[in-house]
Image 1 (cartoon, rainbow, N blue to C red):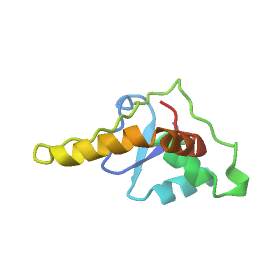
Image 2: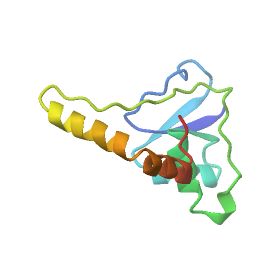
Image 3: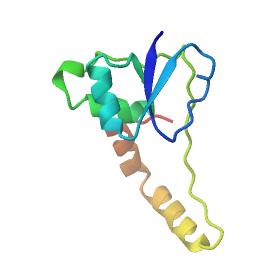
Length: 113
């Protein structure tokens, strides 16, 4: 069967009883190396992180793809606090005041919403 690497400690949603063997590693760089050298057939991780790591290697650019037919999870990140409403307000102000800058960064790093 196929073997996918994943970052140890992260949940691998949808892969229980999938017939795919899962091989943990504590280091994303090791996982990317294992993928490049065909020691695993795939990596279950954040797609943007893996693609960014692969860009470092000339021989790996455009060689790997995100297969949406396999189980995956869309991630969302939120900032919250019970005790520091002021920090949340500052962050919201920053986001509001820097929309163009944030859009440029998203475009630069290939982040879509």
